[in-house]
Image 1 (tube, rainbow, N blue to C red):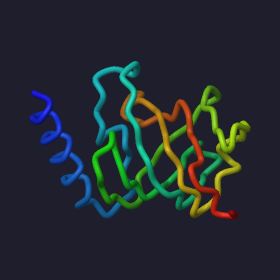
Image 2: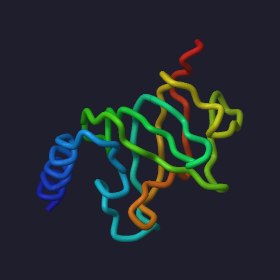
Image 3: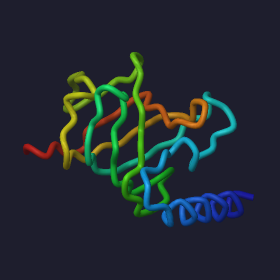
Length: 123
């Protein structure tokens, strides 16, 4: 059963790679409920404070290696950004930062609960 789930997840990720427009991890992950969390790791491309969106190149989704460019992750007022034990705002993220995200599908959007900076581009 677990193997079948992993195969389905891999097929969904491969299908999403064919798109040339910005993708939304919420539609790719397709969690049946907002309470089911997923993990994403990647590198920040840009941060759009108006749309409360981070565009990133993903490297792993739920510990499955993947390469997807231009994926979108959203934040809300409950999203926590952590780096070296200190809290920051999502708008403090910079292009090139490596991040690990714990989030969930919320109406077709992948919304971050916690964003952990694993490597700061500045050092």
